[in-house]
Every structure is written in structure tokens, then in C-alpha cells.
Amino acid sequence: MTRVPEQAVARRSEDPADELLRSFGRQIKILREQAGHTQAALAQLLGYSETQALSPTESGHLIEQLLRGDL
Image: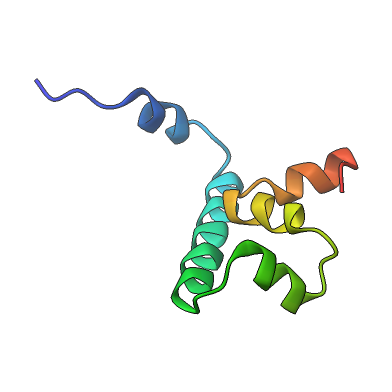
């Protein structure tokens, strides 16, 4: 019998928008790495004052933080 990882089961019940944001974040990270940039370098190029703004984007949590008023 094949076991399904618990994370995979948990993700199936999540809001599809959450997966879309995570997918967007993964793409940002892949493109950043392919361009040879660190988070700090890309943040500077984008005009962010802190690299902390880029990490939530890559992890798909930026919208959550914006809605909570953390950024």
C-alpha cells in the first residue's frame, strides 16, 4: 500500500488561491536563482528596503502578511 505524505493530504483541502500564491512564489525563487541573485540583491533591484519582503513572496505568505498588516 502506498502511503501519501501528510503534507500532501493537508494541501488538498486548502484554498486553491493558497496554492496559486505558493506557485507564484516558487517561480519567483527559481527565476531569482537562475539570474544569480540573492534575496538581498533582488530586493534592492525591486526597491524593497528590506529583504524580509521577498522571503514571504517566495514562500507564498505575502498576501497573508499584508492582510494582517505585518508589512
